[in-house]
Length: 98
Image 1: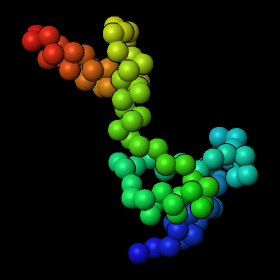
Image 2 (image 1 turned 180 degrees about the vertical axis):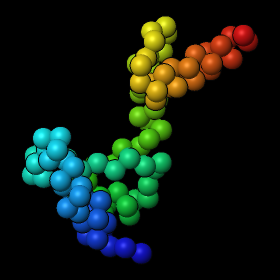
Image 3 (image 1 turned 90 degrees about the vertical axis):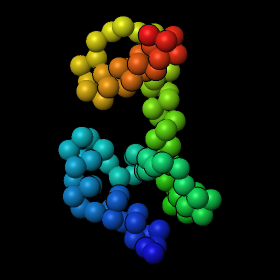
Image 4 (image 1 turned 120 degrees about the vertical axis):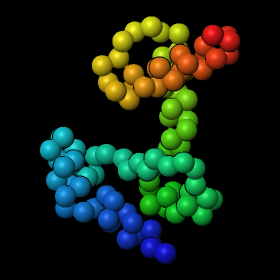
């Protein structure tokens, strides 16, 4: 198993990662580190906290997005948002028996 330090260096400290972030105007000391995952263990949470890494649950992100667009009939140009919107609409139709 890799150590937290090695993972942090690989995911957040590699020259290519830092360079790409700089392309978008980010400097290493002025942004947060975030890992999006499908849940995690208590051990992983403790290691992330110790490394000042935020853990975001993918399932909650999708729920939050779907809640914010629920009931809207807008057209989304972003493929991911359009897919989530269509999925939410399909679930609503299913609940209504359509």
